[in-house]
Length: 384
View 1: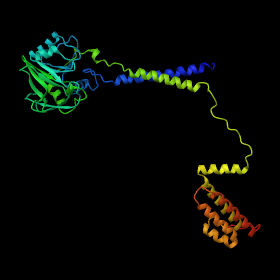
View 2: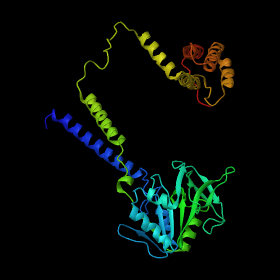
View 3: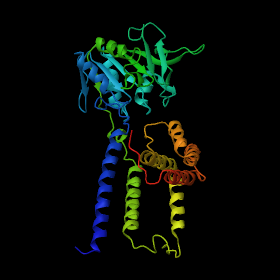
View 4: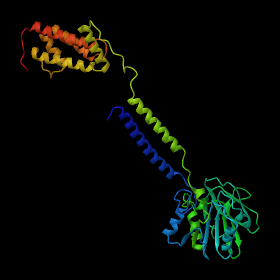
């Protein structure tokens, strides 16, 4: 392989790795993006998968209505925040199910449904985007709400029909905040909730929300009405941040590769010219400075002191195991001059690092050995 092809191949491999990592990261980010689709297939916080799973786990009858399906007599038709616009004919069929003795539970969403709002005389008053927890308790006797407290969002209802009865809400002042209305229709009833929060996955297990679903299932088989879901409304849009991040990573990897393989524009470092005329004293001074900067002076002092004690054992018969005080006492009996040099060495050994402590110790050791040699020339004491 030619040398010129190596950078190209390395760059292609690097870009392929970055592209693969970016693709995986983008896919994971898409999976983690929250879908607001109110479907029993959505396990995200805004979905209804938990309600369906609980009904299945407890053996309660339920089914999902798709396009072309119609609710059966006695079923509880559960219409949760439909993102698609419900037409006049479909709205009339939903209300007819209640008139024939069924129960319709409509949890309003962000999209207005005029074909249902006008016949029921109900409108969403506000707070549809408020997802914080709000307490919803019974405002009037009703078998679905009496004795339980729901946790829901902050949306509220306003009624223009004399027949609609506020059955649940929050008492914040003289006029309560209504979050559930009951509208009698023929032989049945329609329950309008201000929002879907009490049935969504992330709130189903709070306070009395699960008890509310249990009471609905005790009224009749649950029919999740998903005939009006809009795929366009629930589809999570691809994040624009991931492609931009991928492109940025590719450019950064290419820049680093070119910087690593490119030709150098100059010397890495300035060449050091060798100095002439350096003596042994200069070398030793540099070596001493190096030891001082490395913090090894104290170790050198200890080594020089051990060498002196071994020399005293060989020449003066003073064992290494004897203490320094004992060694100095014995040494004074043999050579007072050597004892004085020994004392200077001990002082240099205990001196703080820096200065001339090491040099003083070495000089004192040499003086002690020389004085001992003059006092006892040629004598080698036996170890005791």
